[in-house]
Length: 476
Image (cartoon, rainbow, N blue to C red; front, top):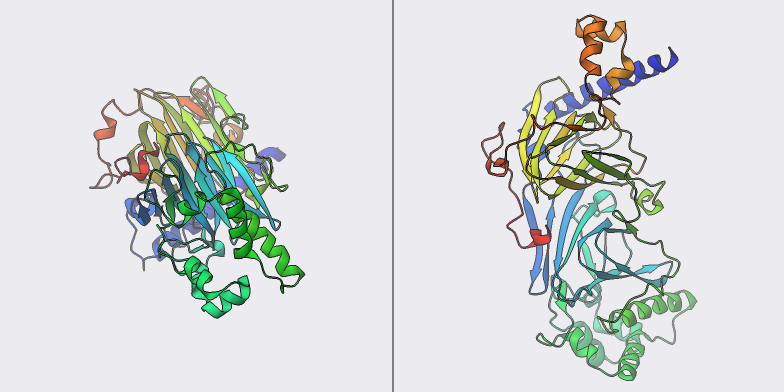
């Protein structure tokens, strides 16, 4: 009886939450109901920058009180032997290596740390922490999906990069200081500091090998080791700095020394400076649920502590052909999801019981589902559907399933529930108990047909805009 009372209380809380969400949904636009497309689908990407060596696109989070927290989704594509120049952001950044190998260098506790990342690896970079990224895959593009947490941002743009070694505006953040300031800070002549900090650079992502046009960084790489070290000492030396400034200088020196090392040399994670290890979703994480129809993984802060700082969780789900992730509700977080492969359908319901949206989804599509909203995903009959995403809470996710062997309806079964549905308890029990599978269900009858990828959204006149044909989305 106690368990049933607790579940009824939980159901009441969920109903109250979705009712409040519904009111906010209508109030956000002065009483005008938003279209499903503008509410759930993240379809308008912004190109942050593009160079010959790579590019970055960002999907900006929707506004409005309906969402628990806002999050932007970024896509980074880098050519072989390219560098995402040293920088720091005003936002927390979680990177997921979709494809390729990378060397990540960053400042951790005032020391330089470096990590070798491979497909499936996750890493969290706190706001304000200097980092760089190098594509070390032999002849392979590097593709990265990232969450950008705007909770710490300046609020000027989607996010703000502060480039240390040049960037979108072809200048280092240090270029904003007068030559006299830089002369004093680096204890170097004006000629040298102007040569370093006023050069035209190649943008945020640049090549760092001999097969492309020389740049400031490639020219530096061509120097002999002793010449490199001497140049670095000139750049970073300041004999009159106090002890705190010396520590900072040493950190920056280590950052530059590592960047200017051989890009394609083997990285063994030897110099990690005590930094947290990366986490591989494919190798390190066991499925939280698995049956003949698919599996699901949800990574929380208790399993990977770095996620606790930005308070963000991660999910990865794979549905076999024709299967369905049962209708469910997330009571603690929004979900921002990217379709990695395959296609199928996304069904979302409004809190009042009406259908919010039924739409075809395919590789490259991005969508968000607010907490409390019931939804499910269905894989097409001719292939599996895999999707990856971020949730807006690092707490252990406990989705409430509304159908299947592990559903709330089974647990709540009794005269109170049958009365709410207006049927006898026996009738309701037979209907609820008919499904013997839990969480991921066999549903060939409900799966979209083989040409599902060509169909348009039922509730909207326009199809989801996919990035599958964009350069950055060849990650998929």
